[in-house]
Image 1 (tube, rainbow, N blue to C red):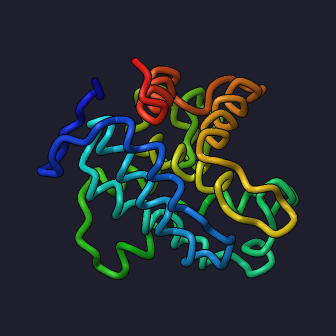
Image 2 (image 1 turned 90 degrees about the vertical axis):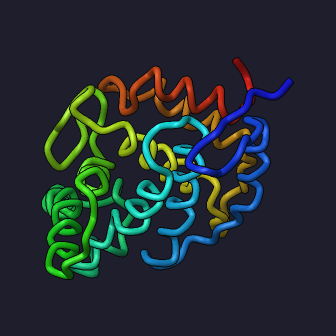
Image 3 (image 1 turned 45 degrees about the horizontal axis):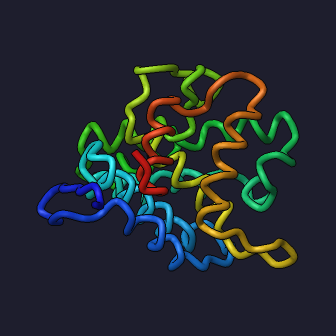
Length: 203
């Protein structure tokens, strides 16, 4: 029998429906605003399935989380993060703060929780993330959900010259990347286990 998930009036959704949903994400990497939506959708699905937070707020934060990148120099926007020079990386790591500043200037009425997700989606559970180096339970779990959704999106994206990953392989790669992270844990281990259990439909 399928385990049932209920969240915010969405009815009872079998856990095993979540993995096939990922087959719909055939994403070619494009400019910034074109790939915010898949992360928003994936984050909302994970929030719903895990019954963590409000899926609508997670979706909103997923859409707005990286708008601050638009304030960075174009050469930083166009270079993969792992190829940035030290001074460029330092500027890049400030973009969550730029996002909050832009949203405040636009007078968008966002909840404190949404603001926390935007501010913290690059923070790591072990304190090695950015921009503030928050750690452990100081990071809201929805921000970690968005981070996992973003990594899944990166792996599932259709990129010219790179073999396409299946949804199952994408989840396996997230786990492998986490196990191979040299500094500790990017994600709350218990949260990542729950994500794997949800997406594979295992206890």
